[in-house]
Figure 1 (cartoon, rainbow, N blue to C red):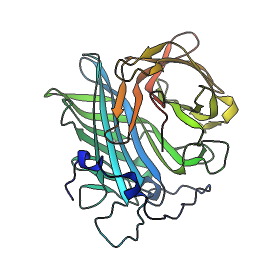
Figure 2: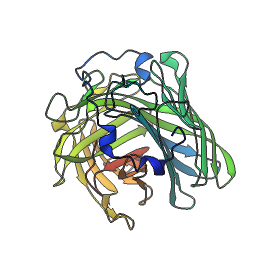
Figure 3: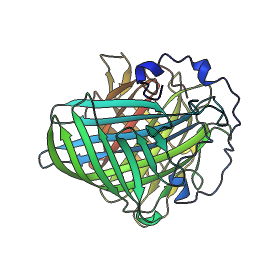
Length: 360
């Protein structure tokens, strides 16, 4: 059972993972403490470490994503069997290959334990077989190491990501509301403007890379309201060193249930956005030939920091993760334009719930 593959896990009835009552975690606001909160929070239902960004090679710019998810199951942590699946770990890795105009991606899943999959508490140290994300150094001078080699996608990432700015606490000092009820919230911080170095391999061709990245770390007990279908999110590193994050939780009719975000200029305090201060207006849409989902690949986003346009650099950046997290979603390298149409930054746009309602 230790070596179960994704195929085996997909045969496990969900009731088998929900057979034991589990105490609910406290979702009230609390101060975040580092480096402890860099680590996992296994008492909460859902958690992720999400790294996205651009990679510049000598000849081309590409996008990348390395994401680790931790999910608490319904099996009690006190279960006497060491084989009990109390935590599941998922991972997604992707490269937006701009030379070949295609998205390469891969995914993994395993139960936590036995040295196969681990999410350490106390600091960032997340492992799923030979994929990993680890942090080192003082909290104010963090350096992350991300490593992921695809079995099927023809790519491999070995990256160092060094902080250049303080941790950006999202929402109210790191407590980010996601809906009208107080419990619909997450603890959430970002590390924007990460300086990237390392190597990217595509079809066996290994090249040095540099660039900029954005990391989000969130953990929650009740992330989405029952009536929510999905979300739209962007994290943008601006060319002047600023950082912009904006999101909206979306209803089935396309309207916003909740919204939020932040903006921080270099050396200045962050400005947190209230729910009624962020408006996403969809523009041009692209329809996936695989899922038939229609994604807005261009947006107008109005925030207290200004009006921006977001434009995908490649339309087809849809990921089918039904073999791990169970969702089809769009996540891809995009550029940020000001009102005059000038590019002022680059980063990632994420859209969930377009192929089917997102369930968390």
